[in-house]
Length: 455
Image 1: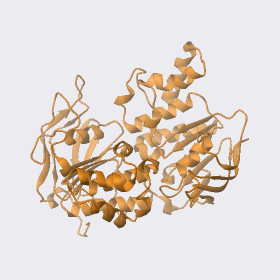
Image 2 (image 1 turned 180 degrees about the vertical axis):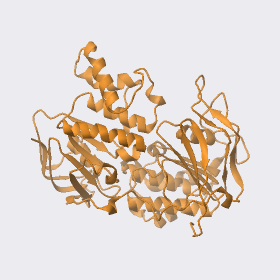
Image 3 (image 1 turned 45 degrees about the horizontal axis):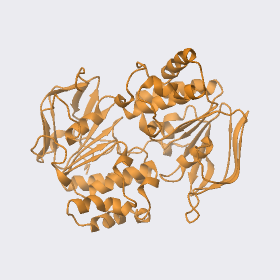
Image 4 (image 1 turned 90 degrees about the vertical axis):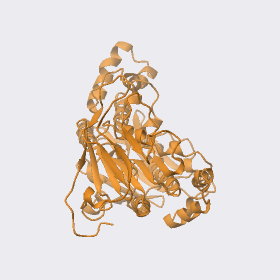
């Protein structure tokens, strides 16, 4: 049964701007799973919004929907959809708006949460969940309405491997029940078992594609870690053994041996959703105040907000929270002006990254991956001594992925100590060590040295 069809659909965000989508022909049937790939900023999220019916700007062409079609959409940044303070209230929100009797809500809410692998108390505060857990929560908030079509914007980037595995089980069952799925995804390989229609969106045009091994996750040559012995740079961050816990709570994780970050090294902080990676980064930056303070020194001082100036940079998982100027160029110049550094660095950085075409655009209208890169480039302009990155590779295609690593290797060569979090092992030769955060334990993984040059 056909659920939705686009016929000659074109769309843009302004009459003076190039079309985002051009002459699209696209049909979705019950039980089908479509995957749309394409470069960062190519309009994939705009396509999902159009399919969901939440894009309110006018478009050309025809969009036909089945008269009884119910559509669910989970955006790339799930936090933009969160409305309530607790898990149960968030999932029940749509049912309340539909006038479902209260006694019928509880089993529906519990079932939706179980289907996405979230076994949490209904009064669990949403604010305590990791970004990956919030993504699954938003899927549950869509499933509770029993949609015919579910649209997911880059789930792989937001979920750890266990979360992806659980999601795949859920999606297989949904397809078997006749639900249609559309995934926007750079890493199609993670969902190849369920996808039966591949599409490539580029230059505004949608073309049928064939999945090949070239579409596998992005990394360079096989990883060979050098091990911490190869880094003899100055210690810029050091922590003694500690237990990390929020006020009045049991320890979230333990670090029995402490850790150090040296000048010029790139260290990966790898752990599952909700393991505490973001909390650790915020503690190092001095923006998370806890009664039980971590025995930690950063650049020779105890972490405290505002004491490091431009010497310490933190890229948040939601990079759009760090963007507030009206253009990309003024955004990148803001901190340079604040710390009395040459404003020319901003234009030089954009030119080096091949992003001058974004200079006058609003950072708030960029794609998720573009926002990540611009926020990172703004920090790189400061040439910090310590850089903390919370999942900086999310939403990146291969082209933008290379730009991120260009920046990180450049900063590393300047002596910057970089700690970057990720849901999974970061497969890049520039990474020298890995801090693993699993099962409530933070430990360092030492790898055998390799003779080749990994710079």
